[in-house]
Picture (tube, rainbow, N blue to C red):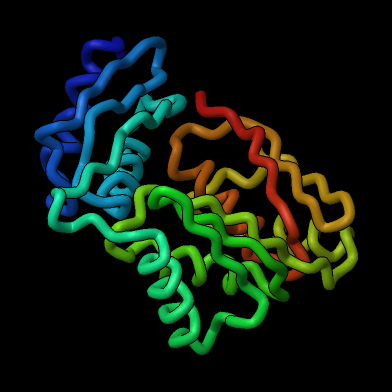
Amino acid sequence: MSDKTLRQTVMDELEWDPSFNAQHIGVAVEEGVVTLTGHVGSYIERLAAEKAVKRVKGVRAIAEEIEVRFPSDKKTSDDQIAKRALDVIAWDSTIPKDKIQIKVQNGFVTLSGEVDWFYQRDDAEAAVRKLTGVKGLSNEVKVKPQVRGTDIKQRIETALKRNAEVEADAIKVTVQEGRVILDGKVKAWYERELAERTAWSAPGVISVEDRISIN
């Protein structure tokens, strides 16, 4: 697929998705690498736009430069965002609220701390990124290793083989002290994401380095 055709396909996908306004999003493509520019009205819209592009076949990489711009009457102070973030985490029974720390600077939220399971780390991010006033989010929460590396490797490889949407034989899994490295080649971006999500779902995983490339 040519860059021109891919650009039009990406633009069509952005226009088709109702979860954000694509009117102010710019698209450039060079050798399969898509660059998104412009602005949207919330952080959750920014994430949705990036997700939409990842669905398009032929996208090899994404450079996401979209800004979040709030109307002047919807701006929220950092201390308000921090308080709301603490509240939503406290309300979620799946998240150990005493283990998550929150920092907010100019609308950008940083989560830190240490939890026992990846889903707790993921749930904390999912809860906070929906808050009004959030321009960006960095999730630095760590997961404590609980399982031996050989067990982690085996569980990930078995899970990949169970998934009909992932070509498991094309992916190599390496585990070092709870740190997972994924290598190989897949045909589409969603396969890469599925493989990474599968790796994160294994108990004891503290980080995932995704080196999988897209053909």
